[in-house]
Length: 332
Image (tube, rainbow, N blue to C red; front, side, top):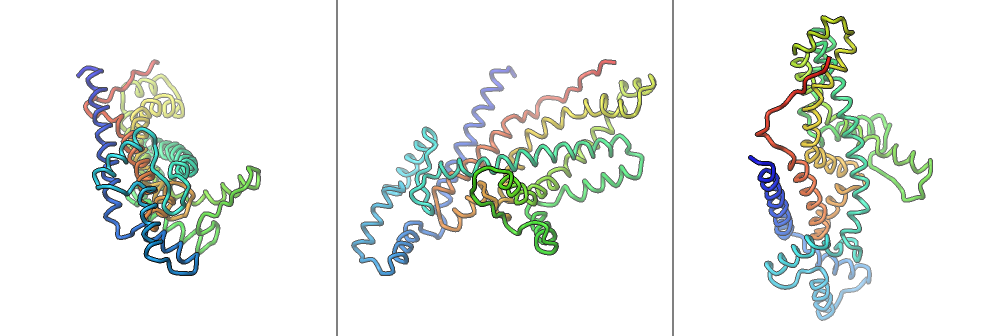
């Protein structure tokens, strides 16, 4: 398969995944029992302290239907939705935070999600690979077996189970961290940075622990296999130290598949970050998604789920299982 043909196929697959995902996000919220317009009219009535006349309620409903893009047939709404999203990243106004546009709320929440995701991914990847390297290089020792058992125990635990466990232990029982995130808007200062780090510590710890189990196991297996390679044996016969062989020979060569796995796992990690944000009320896309579901906010659901689909599709687009793994020769 030529390079251009491969790129074309991957691009078509990428576009198809985005199209199908965006289409599903349009139709699924309409199966929800909540009617956002009825909810908004009820809010107006409760604030006014009186019941609206049928004529006034009908007029408000007609205005909101036009404003939210719910007029016309379902197919017409779908075509208008695709046009607005694809060409303008416009999901319309938020039902629950009217009149603020959904795109504005997403742009405010996205840095929180990306900051949490990137920081925890890097820490988890580094820790997992270093622990896996030790477990693989010294695989005949007892502490290496204990490190491998640690990875086996952590790897299958879902994000939300681990998050609930840490909340019960570190926030409810021992009260080391807050039960939910309470970051107040304020100018950036040392006190504000300290508040952000303190409130983000427990969600970050959840993602770090949940993420490095697989890195331990995979790096351990790669290290064991790489340690038996002829170039490592030759380096040992030359009298190089264990530290030099472990980092300069085994680690450098075993790390290449781990870099690829990191890129392919970003979509899964992104979804795990959203679940963690929901549980900790962290001000990211996950919290926006939970709020949208509770309020029947179609437009907010469209925006947050579309961002998730984009992240997963982008992470998976680099996968090419038909290529064999190539180990570069190490220069002695």
